[in-house]
Structures are given as C-alpha cells and as structure tokens.
Length: 275
Image (cartoon, rainbow, N blue to C red; front, side, top):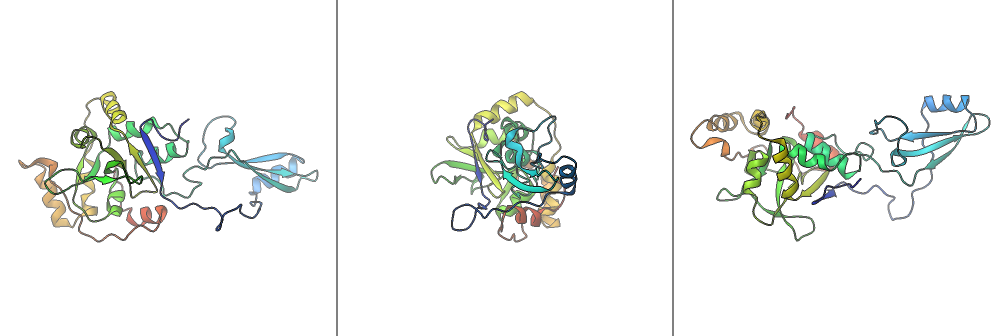
C-alpha cells in the first residue's frame, strides 16, 4: 500500500524525533501494562506484542502495526523487549494533532500507510474548503517545498485556515475549485497542518465525477463566527443571498500566533465543530 495516492506527495512538517546528534537512541525497555505483566505470569517463556493504538482490524495485526514485543522468562517475569524494525508509526503514535476533518484524516492515514490514499480525493470531492485570494479575485498561488512546483494552497477546515494567517480567503467546493486552479498548478492541502500534501487535479476530477451532484451543508459559512468579528461575519453571510453571490472573499480579523508544532497549533485554534 502506497503512502500517497498517484499524483500526490505527502510532506510531514513535524520535526524528526531521533536522538540529537545522530545515531541510535539508548536502549530502554518500555514499561509493560498490567495486563501484559499478568499474561506473562500466566504464560512463562512467551512473547507478548505491543500493537500500534491506531490499528483496529480484525484478526492478527500485520507486522507493520506491531511496535515490538516483550518476552517473559521461565518464572513469568518480563525480561526482554525487542523492537520491530518493520513497524510503521501511525499518526497517533507520532503525536500528530487529531485530524480536523475527513480530508485531514485521510491525509494522515495515507501518509503513514494506515489508510487507502484514494480516500483523500474522495473526501475532498464532497467537502467544502477554502483558498486564499490574490488581488483581482484570482486564487493565490505559491511554490511547494521543492522550490519548483506551482501550487494553490487549500485548507480543509477553519483551524488550518486560521493557523495559516490573516489573508483574504474564499470558501468553495471542489467543482468550483477545479475550474479556477491555474494551468500547471497542483493543490497543496493544509500547508499549515502536521502533514501537508500536494495533489494533482486528475484524481480529484475523477472523485468529483464519481460522487455526482449532491447538496452538502455549507459548513464554512456556519463557522465564520469563529473566524470573523460578528459584524463582518454577518455582512458576509448576508451577501451570499445578494447579486454578488457567495463568492465574496472574507478576511479574518483576529491575529493568529504562528504554529509552534502540529499538535499545539491545532489545539490552539480549534474552536468548535467545522462539520
């Protein structure tokens, strides 16, 4: 299972947690939970595996979901810990912030090989998102972390949008987004999140076509009270019924502190249920 869908690239923005200065961290056996200690007492000379907390499948977990194993001696005492070199840490095990929405969840799971990468485009196809606006009403473009690829930053929840800073933004859905993205650009999903991902337009177009035309609740307008002062939010919501339509750009007015890390940033800005 690939960690990213065809035409997509994941970028983990959390810092690596290896030992400072390189090399392997000192050996330390994790403290076994009480139920493992009791199992070891009842089953001497056995191995007892520790499973990643995200794994919820049926039957025996795959090798990549096993963090490691404890061994009990002939007296039923835990005496050894063996790490699994094939283990793939899940988003939860890596300490990433809880996902703010279905797209964010799909990105985190696909990046760590705990979910199908195709779920990213499927979730994005039916979810409202927001984009920054450039002077003149076009979408704001940027450059991906590779310093070459032109991208359009896309935010899948108010939390990610607010963390990115005080810029004019516009809520929309995937069909409209596909019509506005400049030629040669990729989508850059949640650049302010713990994991960002570039996505080509092809998979999203296919997902939109597969999803068909459906009415979905306008979640961004419902969340504007958390992003704008009351007067601005009210004006913008009312404007959606005027001749200008819902395309009017909204401007967050409250200062936003720069993110310290993925978990802290998301926790600081979470102010209610987006969906």
